[in-house]
Length: 78
Image (cartoon, rainbow, N blue to C red; front, side, top):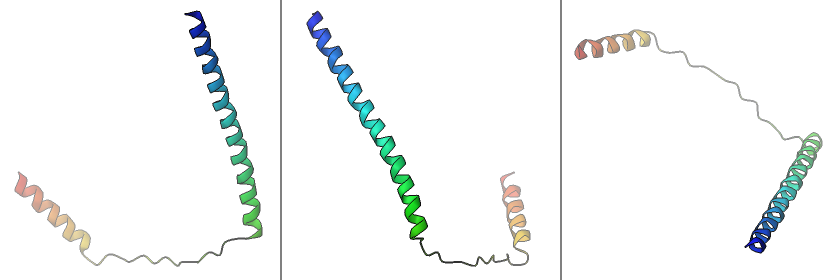
């Protein structure tokens, strides 16, 4: 029974060690790639389009119509 337990613990330690090494390598490679992409963005910037934002004003009396509709709904419910 103890031999099976030892094999299980050994497999557990090896598996967790492998995952830890993989995640460490993954974090370092992502950090390096982030720095590389920032450096490449300085060399090759993307062209951006400038949009002018226009805000449409609500038609006159729209707020009043909404208030009247809400009042009518409340009056019907009670």
